[in-house]
Figure 1 (cartoon, rainbow, N blue to C red):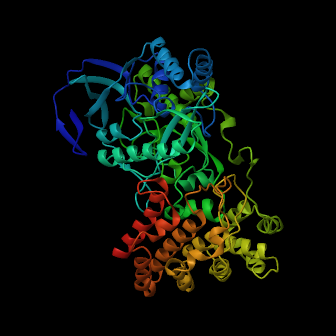
Figure 2: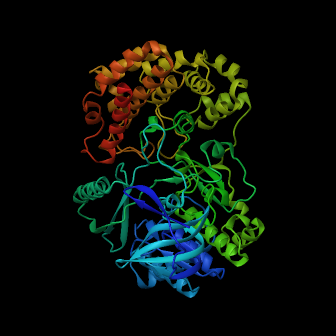
Length: 617
């Protein structure tokens, strides 16, 4: 048998004799947060012997310890619905808010079903026999502790246990390795005596560096304090010490879910639960995201379109490892899908699915991969964690716009939509149609209706046709500040879309235009940068951050990088331009008035670092 453990950030391995396990359980859940708490409850409800481990002194994760007590998308279903109803009742009768009530309700359920908890306890290693997990080593109250198990559920959210067991992991976006911004929560008392909270984007952080993480936490709390002093009617109770890390390591699973799968609506024969949300990535540096995401999010202006994502046990199984399941935001998916498949409701269903699977495996004495799908499906359907209604396809789903999205194929319908202020579905439909719609789009490039001309150019560029480039350059020359109205927030400026697409097309003729935008000292004096002054939910702007200026500059910089990568003859001049434009912090300072370490400052700093790294390469 082998004992695998972490030392100085690396996984080490030693051969050991048969460990002297202090106890053996059917299911051991490492991490009793959003997913893990439900895994403990679900597995024990099926009659399994269960031990839940957590490094924190409480259970429930961000929904309790992090004080994010509300939900953003995900679909209600499964055990968490009854828990939430009981929590609301207890919260009204005995507490000022739901957070402590939810912890109490879940702890009672864990006790009721005979499971055990070991809090303030850390998993220090995993025992492996061949490719199968046999147990773990723990550290609790200053001493080691060994526990054997049939199935280990990694609900740590950061794939720590999966890594020790031998799973490969990945983290962050391809362009610069950055993960999504983290969140910090301010809890305050309203003038009416009720408790409220503010969920605040607080910048980018490497949570695996203890010093960087600590600086991030302190900076986030300092920023929250500045906001406090602006509104004396809000009496702050506390800043939640448990910050919200939206993304970390992701396991290499037996089946990975990609953004291409989500956009194509790939079905899954053995679905355990559905995720449901928009690509809620939070960071505004869209230019550093993948082409697939930018085509949807930027070019087609569909940032708040919601997608259903079916999840199977293979996506929750680290590749090549038996006796192990992952439950939480670290299951097998790419960076883009990680922004969608992480909502609390869905992660609770993920934990419930893992717990049921593990309990059924223990009952039959088999690996979780051998549990008949029909058995776990029937249990999840009975609890409501898996329903046909959860497969909603693609939707606009908010108070601003609630309707199913049907991709278009009729040229007449597409023409009408492209000329409107809500052309997003038509634009993305043209991407899906590809060359078959191109003749119509090319014909519309010379139409007298400027809205149709511009809409057709955007749609044509998404098919990869360079004939769109002259009209795109016209939009940029005009610094067109019209923004589409497809979504409730994060709507895109038309000139920003054009800049992105010129880079996507690697249009060499746009190099002088884009270079002037980045280096001309008069650029920021143009009137369009000062037209939109007030914060707007339609644009998701704030008063300290010039959204239009940032989006144009960031997309121009990345567009030049893409052009240089395809046109070697322009590489030297483009590197010179980018080096000049980002030699100092002037673009950061013109974009935001907030200090280093804040979300707004870091957003432009990401662009600067990316372009300077390209210049050095």
